[in-house]
Image (cartoon, rainbow, N blue to C red; front, side):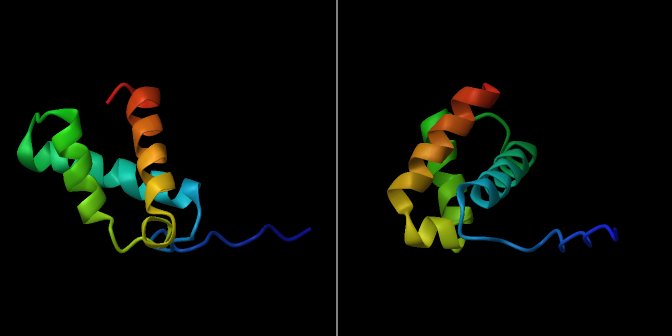
Length: 76
């Protein structure tokens, strides 16, 4: 059986997993560039950074819930 090829790392999908990956990357990038910030303020910044993600465009409230879950899950 031939293994499936790896998808390009910049490929995005309209689902929570793809959004979570983009959110985590933007969160880490923000921390590197701007240091500490109140979680609510950083969340707004990150959501604006990933605002073109299909999951954010099509399900903005669910994206906020996933973001809050990621913050709790990872202790961000």
